[in-house]
Length: 228
Image (cartoon, rainbow, N blue to C red; front, side, top):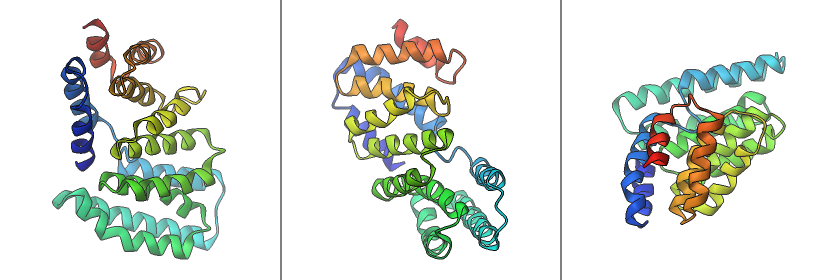
C-alpha cells in the first residue's frame, strides 16, 4: 500500500540500529493490522449492533443501513480485482450520497468511520482524518468506538509522517480504561517513539505491552525486540 511505502521511507532515515528491527516490524504490521476495517463483516456487524442498542426503527435508519451495506459490498467486490485506490474511487459517490441524504442518521454517522478507513487504505490521509474527526464528534461518549477512531487518526497521521501528532492519539488510547485497540496503540507507540529518537520510551511501551497483553499477536515480535 502507499501508506506502507511512505512509512518505510520515513523510517529508513532513522539510525541503523532501528532500521534492522523496523523492517520486520512494519512488514508485520502491514500484513496483520488494519486500524479500523478489521474486516467488512466486523464493521457491518458493529453498525448493526449500535443500531440495535440505540433501538433505531426509523425508516431513514433502515434505508441508510441498506445503502451502507450495498456500498460496502461493492467495495469488497472491487478489492478482489483491483487496488484499494480504485476500489475507493468506485464507492466515493455512494458514500457522498449517503452522507448528503442520511447524514443525521446513526447509521450514516457510523459510516464515517467506515469511509475514513476506506480513504486511509487508499492513501488519502486527509479525507480519512476529516471523516474520523467528524465521527469523533458523534461517538466521543462511546469508549470502544472512541478508541477505534483515535486509532484511525493515529494511523492516518503516520501516513502523513506527522509522528508527534500520531503519538498523541495513540497515547490517548493507552491511558484509557477501555481496552479496545490498546495493544495496537502500545505497539505503535513503541516504534513511533523509536522513530522519533526516544528509544527508552519505546522500550518501556514494548514492556508494558508484554505485561498488559502477554498473549497479543505482537508478543513474539516484541519479545525478540526487547531481548535483542
